[in-house]
Length: 621
Image (cartoon, rainbow, N blue to C red):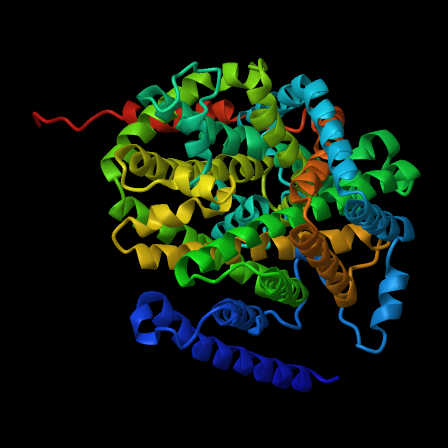
């Protein structure tokens, strides 16, 4: 097929997306902001279909627009995430030939077996998985707490120490993307829609059942501070450091030692680059694929519940079996299209849109919400967090810590394989210090601001009687998915906030799912073979099938627990990765003149001082 044919085809598809976006958008916006004009003409599942057409066609249009570098050679860093084109006729054969049989077959077999057992013996399967998860979290809880703290301390050493001065790919390497784009890609890939799901809910739960570390009475003013501090703790530097603990070793060995872009590259110091085809390496990559699918698919299922709750809240759409099918199918179509379009087009553009919507929503919520309460309590929480973060990291008493903190760390480590691999692939031409700052400090600042604004707003409205989100959660059988909507509806510009909130659910889920689909296709492909479009469609469809099975067959919490089980092994692998990176840095980078931040600042002092040593002009002359 010629380039002209491809270009014409893209224009046709883009035109179809744009027309659908404008047509469905007109109806959705009128129905959302002026429901009285529509009345009962449109109802039921039609609203869900129109909403999906609106969001899906808009994101699809962004993904298929041409890029100014189409057809040109990509930089080495971005080429690691390249997608092979192929004809439809050779699609199936290419998928089979390009995949590693073990990495392709084992995750599919495990998930298929799980759902078969869940359907045949639901109670027994749920009890067995939950019992295993509870035992591992309790037994390995101190280890997970320790590895999380180790990751933070190690990232601090890289940020301020001399090793942070190392430029990945050599001094002549240049980044593939501008820094704002780099941050957008890292942030949106690593956080998913969990930040939207838990933004209005987590602080409320901690307010209702305060963490034992602070020993505050439930519903008290002290419980407000404890709730905000622990929200910062669970979504701050301790969480994001898990990604860096895997991603930075991968980046170093890929760009400094020529290892392949694989999670198993963390074994380079022990096996050598030539030994990365060993069964141990394949086991690590297989576990990474399993963890990625479980994490993303479960998140997709949970976020679908939140989106459906929002549609039901706005348009009184009754729950049905077709709703989840429509939603997951629509989201899957969008994130597969985004992944197939490549990093330069769909993934990059939608991540940028996500960050813009994220900032706009937070700013608008801060403007119309209880700003004084948010600022005052947020400032206090930041101070308390700075004082208590170290002892909180070591606090391990009671079941609350296991159910919240340990579970969170296991969940973040289960996401670390795909997030760390993606961060590594993007980081050529960046100094390690910049990678740490972006993937831990900058991302934590963004999530921290979000939880202070949204969590503070939720607590203020709950305490003041402006909204009863906890009551709404109870009415829905304890489902956190509904928490945000009664809060937003009680504020000025509530319709606009709810619309942006639904938009964030979609775009955040798409930005993580398209990235995970691409990374999974890379990990499952044979070495030295870039994933094909068929591979991406396969893994995107499989993630959607797992998510849909979660929603229809039940057992979502059990599958979530099953996915979290992979967090414990990857916490152990993170320690191994940091040990291997330390050995490599000591052996290969010692004596190369790398300078810490303090040394760089001191080296500049003589230059600064020289300006003060110049004799001033004679004022009496």
